[in-house]
Image (tube, rainbow, N blue to C red; front, side, top):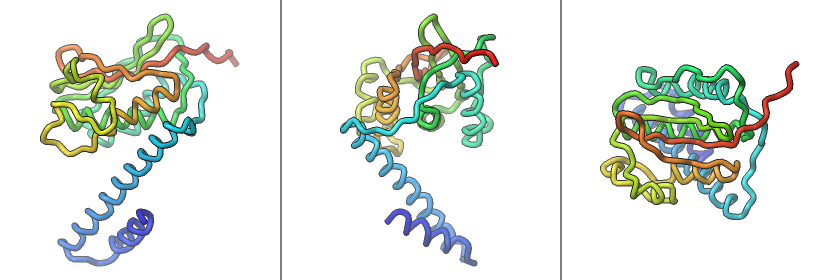
Length: 209
């Protein structure tokens, strides 16, 4: 049904319409897209619960991957989204599903843009054993007492009061990270705000050509 609604509304969009009619058609297209995304997430939940979530795992260069993610997401808020300078000379490799990590980053960036007003920064940090992809904002952050709850399905934190949402964004990220043997961590950004972290174990770098 969503595909049919989208197809017919896009066909209407190409016709000559009055301004009110075009606004209505655009709203139908946007809401159909949103509903399609919600259905996809619910299917992921069902597959995850059944142990049948589809993943395509491979080696990823974290710095190069984050640059690609930044370029893809920058259109959401060109004046607000920032990319931290690379901090490591050597390639930092993780083992993950590239499309799923992109999905996680997109969800975190969209949340950060929605619930904060300043810049949103993407960054990579690494220790001897693990690597984290960060999405840092300048909002009010997530209270420590709520951090375990906001990654549950259909739960929204106190900072989300008054905004539109379904309460499944962080739950989806948490599901995908666990499926990739990673971890979603919630911290405090320096100077205030949330520091959302996708944490992976480091993989060996690829052999030199």
